Length: 317
Image 1 (cartoon, rainbow, N blue to C red):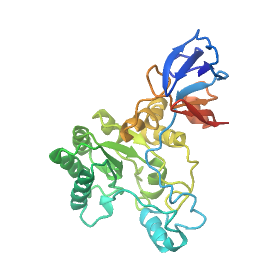
Image 2 (cartoon, helix red, strand yellow; image 1 turned 90 degrees about the vertical axis):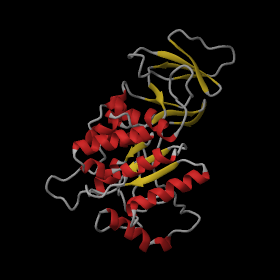
Image 3 (cartoon, rainbow, N blue to C red; image 1 turned 180 degrees about the horizontal axis):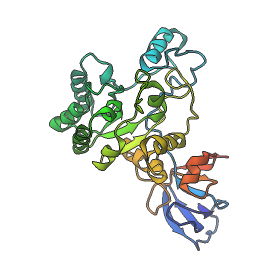
Image 4 (tube, one colour; image 1 turned 120 degrees about the vertical axis):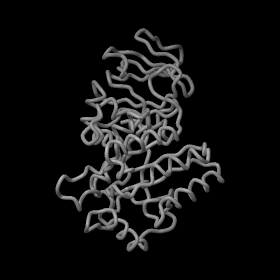
């Protein structure tokens, strides 16, 4: 397959063509000519990038905002509402995954149990960690130390990590360095945490976001996810990772290219997916957007002209 007349983030606005063979990108250039029998897609001058990755989403709760209200608008209000209305959801459409050490009476013991369980099963570990703004109640450092001491090697992701953003700079840096040493990826979830966190602090209200800058400075892979979609935890949302990227620009002070990476390149690293995008040798997980730049793509949030997964077009607009 040959995709013609597109720009890429690295082509500096110049149109190029991209050849796909199997599930890989094999050639990129301005003068590529279609081979006999080769299918061709005209990109119409659009921006060809790697496709997006959702690192953290509760699809079991999506679109429940009208059915299950959250009158208090905070985390425990959402949890209480979900528990009270559990009867309206069937077992078939509700499957809960992951652990939440911060909701346990003993977060340190919860870390130990969950790391040991994942180790016994030989599977990666994805935790909801420190989803609150209490600077005196944290478990991230302990999680990192436990991963290091046990030699856990299946991959660990810590999502939310809100209370780290409430720590002093020295503590943020020390924790970030320990997370980096442990190889733990972090997923920031601005949609939900901006909505749920900080309601009890009306003066100098916290952003409800983890310490993105110091984590990235320490070499921690920081991705962004959508978390909740029109439910008691977040009453709005489009289900588009570009929305999370936009929030990372506004709330975490990332530049547009960095924010895009948080829902694409870095997100792939966090979930353990292969490198993808318009680059020779990369997996052909691609999308085409009618935009002149990554910044414009995030700002407008328009539809993708097509989405390709492993060399196969799975969506056209």
